[in-house]
Length: 348
Image (cartoon, rainbow, N blue to C red):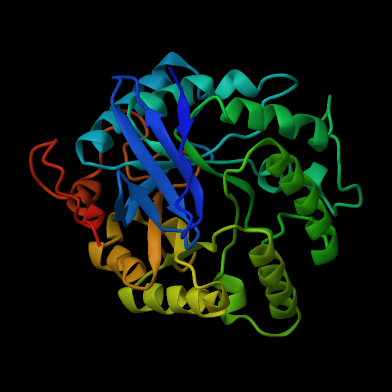
C-alpha cells in the first residue's frame, strides 16, 4: 500500500513536505522538508547522505529481472547501512509507458527509501531539445505538455517521493544544442507549471556550478544568467559537484551557498563524486570530502552513482553483481551490515 497522510503544518513554520508514509511493513514515518531545505524524520532534523541511481544504471532494460536483482542487492546493502534517500531520473519510455518505471520505484518503496524523482528531456532527448525553438516540443507520439502530467501522476502513486526534479544541468548544452536562457526559462515555466498543477511537492532544478564558478567571458555570462534563472525556479538550491580534494569541494560549495544566501536555505548536493582532469574515480572519494559539503550548509548529498555502466570509474557498486566496492564500504562505515554506523544522520 502506497498511502500518504498529509498532516497540517504548524502555523509558525511552513513545510514544503509534511506527510506520514505508511511503509510496506505497516510501520509509519513522519517526513517533513522545511522551507530551508532540511529534512525531518519523525521530528528529528537530519543531514542525509544518499545515492543517485544513475542515468544509465544498467546495460539493457532496467526492468529486466537480472538488472532488478542487481538493484535489489544494492538496496539491501544500503538499507542495512542506514541510507534513506535515493535520486532517480525516470526518463521518457514511450507513449503511455510511464509505469515502466514502477518495478524500480516499487523496490525503492520496499527498502524504505525517500525518493527525489527526476525527468530530464535535455539529456535524454538532446536532439529533440535542440535550440528549444519549439518549447513544447514533440517526443514522438506526444508533446512535453501531454507527457509530463502522466509522468507526475505515476510518481504520485508513491508516497515516498518527496521532491521532483524538472531538469538537470542546463548550463551544459549537449552537442549542437544552442538554446538561449530566455527559451530555457519558457520551457521550465511550462514543465514546472504542469508539475505544480498536479502536486505541492517541491520542484527543484539541478545545476552544475563548475563552469560559472571558474569561467570568464561569454561562457560565464551565459552561465551566470542561467544560474539566476535556475534559482528562480528551484524550491531548494541544488548543485552537482565533482572535484578532487577536500579544499576544492569546500570552495565550490561555498560559492554555491554564497549566491543563494538571500534565500537563507540549505543546499541539496544532487550529484557528487571524485573527478580529476575530467576522469571519474569513485574509489578516491573520501569521507572528508563529503563532510566538507555537510559542513557548508548541505543538508543532503547524493553520491553519483550507484551504477553507471556507460562511464568507467563512476559507480560505487560492481555493475555486474551489485556488490559494494571496497571504498563504498569505507565511506559507509566498516562493520557488520546492519550496524547503521553512517555518521551523517545524527540529529542536529
